[in-house]
Amino acid sequence: MRTGPVRPLRRRLRSRTCRVGCGSQEVNDEPNVAPATAARVWDAVRALDYHIDLQAGSLRRTDGRTRTLGLLVGSVDNPFSGVIHRVIEEVSLRREVAVFASSLDDDPEREERAVAAFLRRRVDGLILTTAQRRPGYLGAIEGRGIPVVYIDREPAAVGVDAVASDNRGGADAATTHLIARGHRRIALLADRLEIQSAQARRDGFLDAMGRAGIPTSLATIVTELHDEAAARAALTDLLESHDPPTAVFSGQNLITVGALHALRAHGLQHTVALVGFDDVPLADLVDPGVTVVAQDPHEIGRVAVERMFARLEGDASPPRHLLIPTTLIARGSGEIPPPA
Image 1 (cartoon, rainbow, N blue to C red):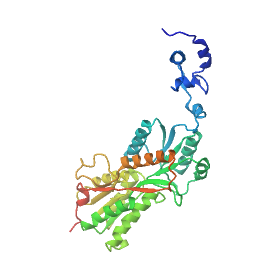
Image 2: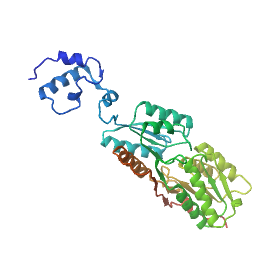
Image 3: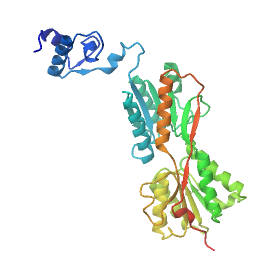
């Protein structure tokens, strides 16, 4: 039977969220605590519904760590971002590190606010997707000495770790695939060009067209597309023009969905070829199946979070830009030949 007064410990744990010094050795399972003392502390913890204040507890840690990371992804409702989020969270939880996550929505102001909120929480590190080429918060991060790993995109002229798909190479492969089927009038539907990945995909598209000797006058590039509705409207205009494309390369998965809607609305899904960058749900179940350049968000997330923990553990090597290969998956839509 447990013995000993609980009342003094109740006074030490008198608030539901207690700060440094209130039985912290016992609740943190530190050594040199007598079993009987630990039992009395836990009786009081359960009686008072006590919760550890992790931020205050970090003040006593010799390394000053809060055991938290800040994660900023493009949008939590985008499957690509969702997989990255899940992988980073799973790896972090195995290391008993919590992840605070937020959506970027390609809004620079939202990005600035999210990073400021992470810094107020005193996170140990930041894994960020950026909508800016030169973010204004970089000085604040450097001043605190917090490690940063960028995913999918990286700022310009900044020595930071970054993990991204081979956007340029993947776009080149997609366009080359269409050219090899005989297409010359190919339309690129692209995101906002201030986004680094969109720029790289456009450059890959132009690389392939130039290498094939196709005049730029035969290439149609529509940019500033960010969602399904905008992509559908843009492709609708092209399909109804006097010189419509025979093939389409869509620069990201939401644009691909919009392009599919436009093609089906015009009954052209078996006539106009389509290759999308990044896979889309059920892409293999529609008719025809959607040919895509698939990214590997699982690997991007894994490499990024492992790089972060390496930095937190003292890795002082120069910053690295790591490219994750893409894979072209032929399912039918990208293999449609041009009209005779």
